[in-house]
Length: 36
Image (cartoon, rainbow, N blue to C red; front, side, top):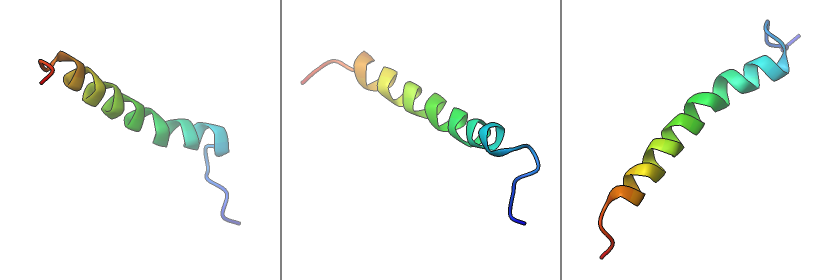
């Protein structure tokens, strides 16, 4: 029926959390670099 086995909220969190971690790493790297 197309529903993920964990439920929508758990599946969404499972997919979004890695993206948030990558985004946070990217932002921190940009902030640590000396500004031109």
